[in-house]
View 1 (tube, rainbow, N blue to C red):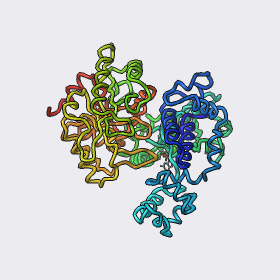
View 2: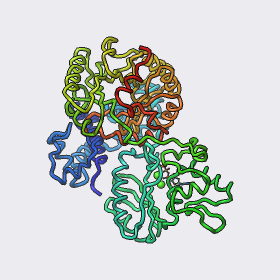
View 3: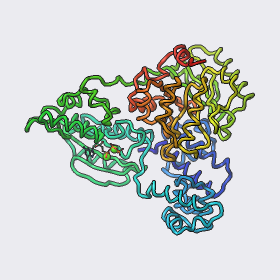
View 4: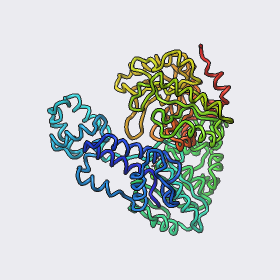
Length: 575
Ligand code: DGT
Ligand code: CA
Ligand code: CA
C-alpha cells in the first residue's frame, strides 16, 4: 500500500520534535508542524498527487523544500533527514516529549544534566528524587511526572485516530473486494461504530475460499509482520504500526458475524441475553434454535430474530439503544446531506492557510449555503489573533465579499477568546455587530475544575455568545481536555439558550459522544463545525457527521441543518 498522508504527517512531527530538542530555529520547527497539520487535513492522498506530478509546493504551508521531502517519503517510505537527526539526538528523548508537562527544553535539560535518555530512565530518576534537584523542576513537578508516567504506561497499546485508519481501511476493503470468490467485505469493530480512535481494524469477508483470502491478505505489500494465521483468520501488523484482524466466514453467517465483530461487547452481550429469553442461541455463526439456524445472512435478520429493529452501528454501545430498538423508536440519525453550511472556519487573517476569497469559493463549491469566518481575537497570540482595529477591517472585507457573492452567505464572525476571568476578548459593541459569535478557551488550562467551569459559565452568561467551541478542550493522543464539569456546561447551555459545538478536527471531535447525547436530551443545539484552517479542511464535515451519529444526533438537534434565516432567529436570545 502506498504511503498514507498520516505517515507523512507523523514523520514531519518527529522531525519537529527532534529539532525542538536540538533547539533549532523556532520558525523551522513551526514549518514542520504546520506541514504535518496540512498533510493530515488533506482530503486527497499525497501519493496520488505525486504520481500525477502535481506541484505540491502549491499546498498551503508547503514550500519547495517540504514538497521535495514529501516526494522522497512517497518514493522511499522514509525521510533521510529524520535518520540523520536521529543519530544526533537519542531516539528515546522524543518519547519523553509525549509525557504531559514535559516540553523540549525540559527534555534537553533532563538529558544533559541527569543523563536521562528514555522513559524508563525518567521513571527511575523521579523515583530516586533526582528530578527535583534540577533548578526549576521541584517536588511537585517530579510528582506530576510520576503521575503522568503511571497514567500512560510505556507498553500501553497506542490507539489510532479514526481519520488515520480510514484511508487504510478503504484500501484494504477495495483490495479484498477485487479477489475472486469474495462475496462481501466490511470493516467491523470500533471503526464501524465510528469511535474517535481505534485499537485495531477488524475486517470481515464473506467467501468460501478462506485460505486463499488469508494468503492474499498476509501477502499484502504493507504488512510488516504476520502475528497469527489460520485457514479462516489472520492478524497482521502494518508498516504504520496499525494491527488488522481478518475473519472469513460463509455468506450464510455473514450478518451474524458482522453483528458479533462490530460489537460493542456490551451491545452483543445484551443481544445474547435477549436471545436466551427466546430460547435461541446467538453467536458469530447465527441465531440457532437447537441445531437449526433461524437467522445469520443479514444483520437485519439477526436483530429481527431477537425481536429488535435494526440498530445503526454507531449506536451499538448499550446506551439505551436495545430498549428503543424493541419499541422501534430509535432516532433517525443525521446524515451529511442534512447539513447546509459551516459555522467555524479560519483564513490567513489569523492562523488559517488560505485567503478569505479562497475559503468562500471552496465552501460554495461544496454546496454550502453559508460559511462563518471565525478568525481568532487578539488574546490568541500564537494563532495571530486580530486586535479590535484589525478585526473591524477584516469584518468589512467579509461584508464586501458577501455582497459580491451569489449563492452563499459569508457570515461575519469570530472565534472569540474566553479570557481567564470568563469575559470575552472583544468589546460589546463589536460583539453586537457580528452575525455569529463563536467563543472558546485557548489559555489558562490549569485552573481547578470548579474555577474552569465557572469561567466558561460566566462566558456563556454573555447574551451574544452563540456557540461554545470545542467545549472539553481535549486533544486526542495529547491531552485529556480541560478539567471542566461538562454536565454543568451542558445544563448551563440549556438554561441560557447557548449552542455547543461538535468540532470536526480529527484530533478534537469535541464534544465527546456521551456529552452530545446529554446535550441532545437537554435540548441544546449542536453546531457541527470543521474549524477548517485551509480550504481542504472544509471537507472534514463528513467525519464530524459520522461522529455526531455516535452522539445520537438527529437533523433537528443540529444547528447547521437549518437555513441561515432560521439559525439567526433561533440565536436571538434575551437580546
Ligand atoms: P478497539 O479495537 O479496541 O477499538 O475496539 P473493538 O470494539 O473494535 O474491539 P476488538 O477489536 O477487540 O473486537 C472487535 C469486536 O469483536 C468487538 O467489538 C466485539 C467482538 N469481540 C471481541 N472479543 C470479544 C469477546 O470476548 N466477547 C464478545 N462478546 N465479543 C468480542
Ligand atoms: Ca477493533
Ligand atoms: Ca480486533
